[in-house]
Image (tube, rainbow, N blue to C red; front, side, top):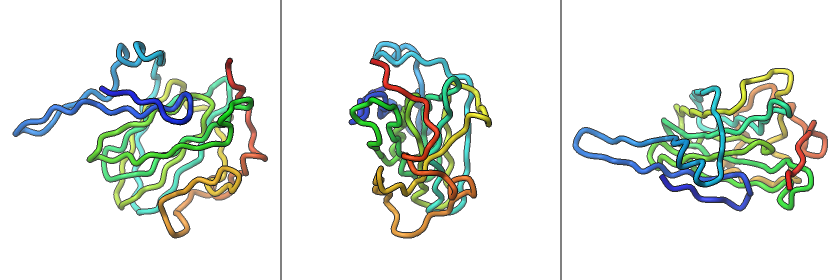
Length: 186
């Protein structure tokens, strides 16, 4: 398993070692020991699984406020997505900056998104499944979002049309107007 830091401190690309033969393949998608040796100490409490039927379905940018903030380990098990993390930690040198990567069933990459980041993805094909682990249970009262199209953030989504959004995501505020309680831990 290869862990690679991104341009945002607290966001990692995880590339599992894949072992294949005439029967198919096998891989570890999470190994607490390897994560811990890289300074990532998480205890995952919940697994989530989403299905999106339509290419261009955009989910996000989502996060939960403290004290129920979530770290997420995201992978695409069917199809392909463009996965994005946005730093929303006040005082961070990368506040408001984003990082994106393609995750697919074929490339088997994962994205680890730490607490203090908003997360979202857009489907690049039809019939996409995404699975992710979180280290805090879902809390509807602390669930928040930021507009996927906030010009202050300026995400370069790899689509040239209006995405398919939930009603909640259509109404999400800009970063400037968002309810945030994250501060960079120094």
